[in-house]
Image (tube, rainbow, N blue to C red):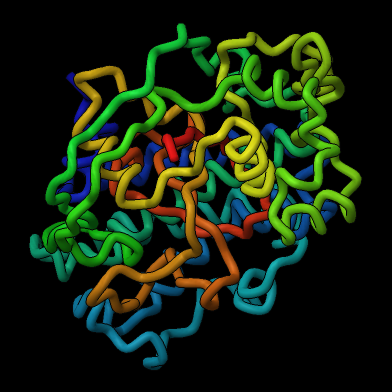
Length: 396
């Protein structure tokens, strides 16, 4: 049985005590990440955009902006995002953290800020009511900080940071699953999205029914062994396998393998924390752009699943061997809201401009278990490879 602190369904409906424990747990991970980056001299490095120190500071700033200073926090998602706020206890923090950059002055200042904001948040949580409305921003703060933990893990991976104790090494964390035959689902009604109640991220709003035709879907994500076959058959050089956007991306990037892969001949040789490692053939591929996933599907005579197909399979087929949660998974189509969806105050899932982003489903080995939900959605550019992402396929 999943411990309450890591149970996604219980956390979405968490009351004061469980939510307090989860917020403390998430903040402790943020502080451990900050310490790891500081030990490697990278806490203020902006090479990949905002620095790790800025990301860590964001955890405190979100609570400061939406909870500590927000006069309408008790109204929950009905609060006016543009309403007047109290002044921050830290002068100039909005200028330092509202836009990506190096963050606060140093790691020590960031740690002090994280301690102060959490203490104040927990005090206000203790006096808040029990309704979904009054707990809205506190639950949102937890999702936001858990997401920050994932982003810091991605940065450690991008930097090939050798000393990263908060994150398990991918070759240790990712299972090498034996191959299972694809699974078949009959045509029928499927409920997609989440129903009201508790914390419901904007991207999951709202539940609706669809009629899905029958389809066949892989039991697990595509592994390195199958990607090696694609590469050895000239997959990265065959124009006919790539979409127009994918081919343009391939030529501009010069890529002939997924990110951090040194070799795709005779097996995948992957750089992990500065070391060249032979990836197990049955381990899921990781750090692939959607363009690569689409090209592999074209080569294999298959296709990416649609969002409703992936979600329906994840909810219906776990007892039959549908494995998800090792890596995020690309699906077909562009990011779009579900019917009836509307944003709300403090939403961490703003919808991108139409046609500008793809969709990742599931979770990765670095997603906090309490955030692993089969209806969760992430929106990123089709060329993005910084998430711990892979893919699976469906029959044509």
